[in-house]
Length: 292
Ligand SMILES: NC(=O)c1ccc[n+]([C@@H]2O[C@H](COP(=O)([O-])OP(=O)(O)OC[C@H]3O[C@@H](n4cnc5c(N)ncnc54)[C@H](OP(=O)(O)O)[C@@H]3O)[C@@H](O)[C@H]2O)c1
Image (cartoon, rainbow, N blue to C red; front, side, top):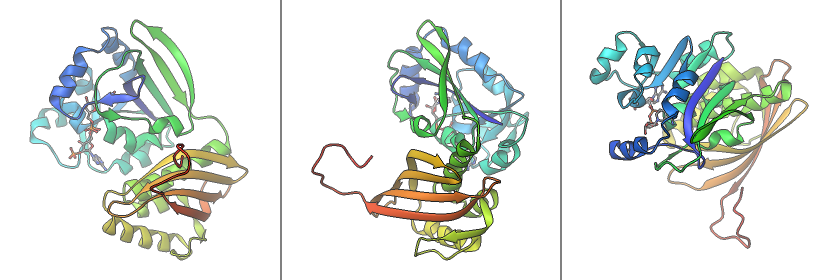
């Protein structure tokens, strides 16, 4: 199973994008936090984001990292790499640990947490009660279908545990978001099809032909034409073997869309049919509520 461990403040800020921002942030963290985090970090296999490792305040991360996530080997991190494996394709770890009994604890900043969110079975979150300044906000998890409980409280914050509900409906919701995320956000439609589509895939979107191969061809083309495109999930509903996702699609250089995707699943939790309805996000509205 994949578990994500991170700290956040009540506004869901998880970090800063500059070293100065990080220094300001670290100075305001509650004194109890390092001990809380060290407890949550413990696991047999730990994967750490390369950028986070470079600035890691916690030596425990340097010692326990088994996998370092980075697109390129970093000569400055050569010492760390000596006892850890460099992973340049996070999907390899997803495949290995997603449905395994063995636990992978993933630790990192925004990029890494987003890489694994839709594959994680559990999140452990140390949440400070004070605002801690920073510009990296990780709030995608709030709509990702976890049940959240408070595990304990300590001076300056509390520990939350977010777990997936049991059952086929929750599994299908998770698989729908994982399929979309791997295909759309990480531009790996071939991996998405192999991991989450059935052998037969009936398509109702008129731009795409039936079957996994047509899905791969279409989204490989979109990956080339729209680098940096991104989807976020606002709502997920499940009933029987169907899942409905309410999504915000961002296509750089083009319109943003509000979309409804409907997926039908087989009994093994693979997607076998898809419908969608898409609306260009309007510039004006008669109400102040936004599309979501
Ligand atoms: N709140 C928390 O618990 C927590 C924990 C750790 C860090 N942080 C904060 O988060 C910030 C850093 O966040 P970040 O998002 O910039 O970095 P990050 O998540 O720590 O690191 C992202 C890493 O992923 C690599 N990468 C990108 N795509 C990949 C792929 N498909 N497969 C494998 N690796 C891939 C990047 O490589 P390249 O470098 O080659 O692009 C980069 O090293 C800092 O402010 C830090 O303090 C917060």
